[in-house]
Length: 147
Image (cartoon, rainbow, N blue to C red; front, side, top):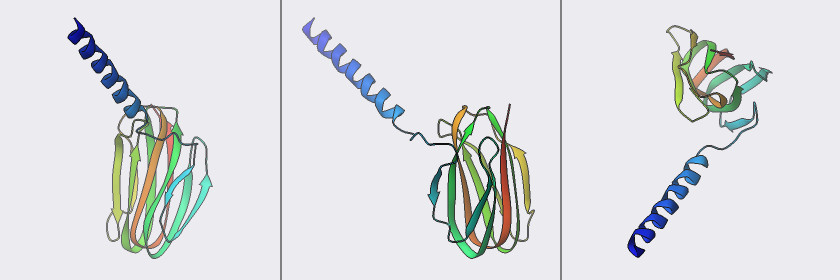
């Protein structure tokens, strides 16, 4: 009986620790908070709130620009386009659980526009990462919540 109680106590402690750790996995962000900005070019945010949008420029610049977005729906309409002589732009979108729901890249010399809907994800604070590599030109992005 004593051994069973110790095992039960240990099991409950382990479950509690795992639940606490998993809840701490994702930081809570404020809407449109810049999470990471290592991009050496320029990013001009033109809209915030439920429909964030912006423009970016670069002269061979590389880096990441990430922000939090409060998506009240389970999917996102994502648009971005580039005009560039070199480099690429990748947009990765993560839902409120941290699961990747969209990953699209556009490169110089290829299709320069992306318009599409993300996979379904958990509503709440999403992370949007725009990764620019050797980017020489300009572009824009926009997001909107959709079901």
